[in-house]
Length: 285
Image 1 (cartoon, helix red, strand yellow):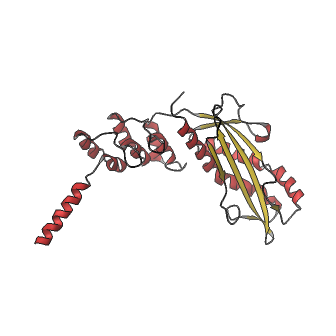
Image 2: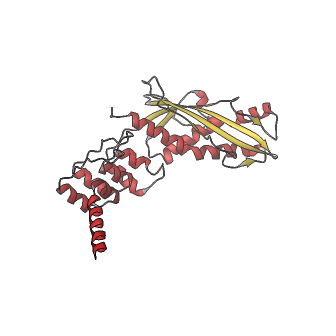
Image 3: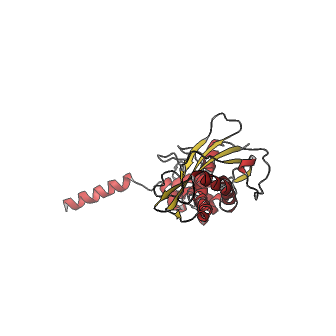
């Protein structure tokens, strides 16, 4: 009997120490619990250890009904967490660029950030990668890759991603002549919010009679008024077994494989740029 009483007491204390709070209720989308806690005097802008308010957490987890409820109760959508992210950014970037219907609903409820006009300059950087094709000499391989225009491929793929999967956050405008393919219909570069310079480094290594392809894109993002880049990152590093573990058995496969690689990296490049721009863009113009 005594042990049962102690166990009951311990459970009661444990329960008392961990009451439902606004953060947890927001994460689970329990508006009735939130209503009750607010009526008891809970702070609607309380923050968790990451500096996130109930509104931020609800947005992050795609709880559109709770986001709408908290906004009606006066929650501030412009609050920032410890990393500088607000509720809109958490909803936008939580799915890592994948279209999620719950997050789409959240994004429609929150104040919309302005769209960015991004000038992209994409340049092939020959000489930084090793060419050892099984099918041609180094000079021939370099000319072959020059005709493929991997820099233009990266630019075109990034442009398509911005239109099809980028939620309309960026309008990509034309950079210099080297960064635009002949097929491109990008607008002239005017009223630029930022410039993205992409150094494309393709490579080929002859391995057991096939060309194992690699490609690295080094991205540098800067605002016109800034002296220092706000993003410097390389994409495609850490690939241990070639490009998506695929190898070319003849030179005609080089271009399709480079394009496939560019498509696999377009989302990472795009959303990294979005995050950097939104973090820097603390207030609308």
